Amino acid sequence: MIPLSNRNALRGIALAFVISPALLTTPAMTKEDTAMFKRLFPGVGKAESVPDLIALQAAAVKAVAADVTDLQDGTWEDRDWVYLAVNHEVLVEDGRRSSTQASVLARKQGAPLEDLDFRLSMSSKSHLLALRDAMAATDGRTWTVLDLTVERSGRYDFAFSYDPSPRLGGNLLHSPLTGLLDRYLREHAK
Image (cartoon, rainbow, N blue to C red; front, side, top):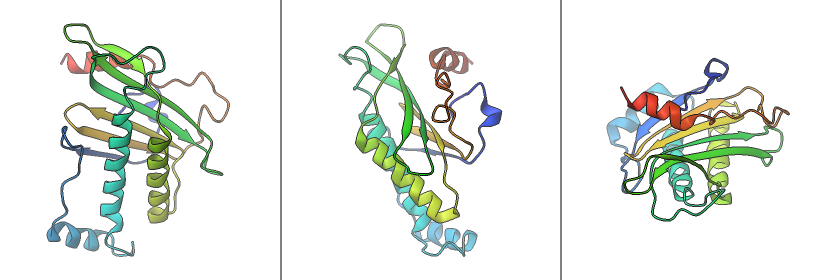
């Protein structure tokens, strides 16, 4: 999860999975998994709805990871990324107005880690909206803020908030990814 200074204000659900770093794919569901989900969520309707959410998450992660080389400033060159973080706000009313901050921690060989901002493609934003719509169809609630982190190892983590979107609500200085590199270095120094 993105360590936010206002983390207590961020409510919702958090989902974490580990995916293959080479393929960024989810593991196949077994018959036992499907039976367990049917027992846990009998009123959901289709048994495929839970695996669909996992597939939608994996597709969103793949799309976002593919965007890291589209830097806001400069060119990617020969960097390797280590960690990426996205804070994506969407208005509930129309689903088309959004505000995104996306940062990647990367380094050139032998150089120190850098915190670089990158752009999310329309494809990535479409994947995030598809995930939002599928989750809303499942539980009747529509998230307004998504925080996503992805480690190079393939582990990724989603956190969702249903509170009003800070930047879209007028707080243009809301910048939860500020200081990402320092937080990452502190957490990984342990």
